[in-house]
Structure formats: C-alpha cells, structure tokens
Image (cartoon, rainbow, N blue to C red; front, side, top):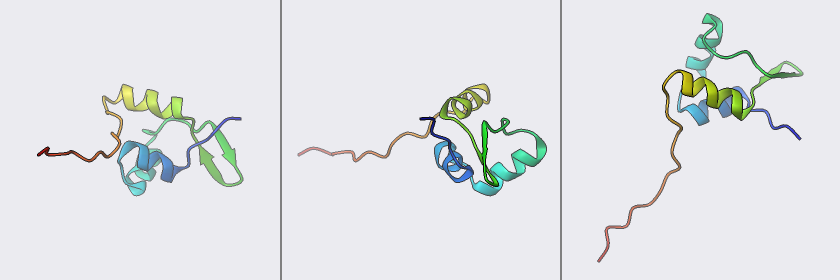
Length: 70
C-alpha cells in the first residue's frame, strides 16, 4: 500500500511552515502531487526526498537526548 504525505506531513518532514509550502505550490515551486484524495493532495516520500535533494535541503534529523556523562 502506498503512503501519501499530506501538506502538513510535508511541512513536518521539511521543517517548513504549511503556509510557506502553500506559497511554493502557488508559485509552482512545490513538486506536482502524486495523488488526489478527495480534495487533498498527497506526495510520496520519494517525491519529497528528491525535491529536498534538488533544493539542497537536508532531512530533518530526529530529536535525540545528549547525555553529558558523569
């Protein structure tokens, strides 16, 4: 089963605001969506990963806890 990212999911993955992504979409800077589900657009992880790579963006790193030691 294919999993599609919502605009909110793309925002979380890219660390960009939803409104920023909406602006990119209006300007044609966001990649074409891979699916439409009802009135919602969806992108695959691969589509967003390629877009981020093409733009020189790094993936959002998972939050970690740093131990300072004894």
